[in-house]
Length: 68
Image (cartoon, rainbow, N blue to C red; front, side):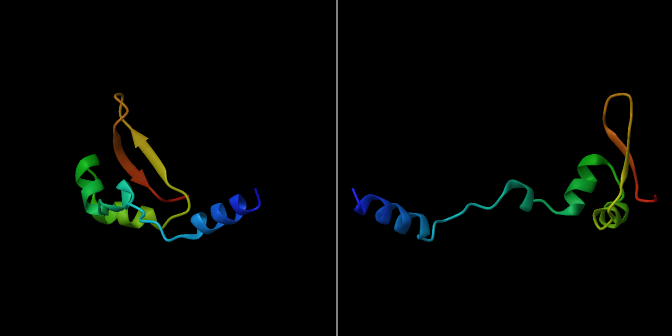
């Protein structure tokens, strides 16, 4: 009974292989191409704290604006 928590603690501390996240595989230029946006505009908006996203009638992103 007392060995079980110790074994579980040791197993939780072992270095496990962590697969990369899917969002880390793509670059900002890949996202810009996918959404038909300017790569420079997308990079500028990623550093902003407030971004306005404009959509068309189908819900697709058409414009990003980082001005408050």
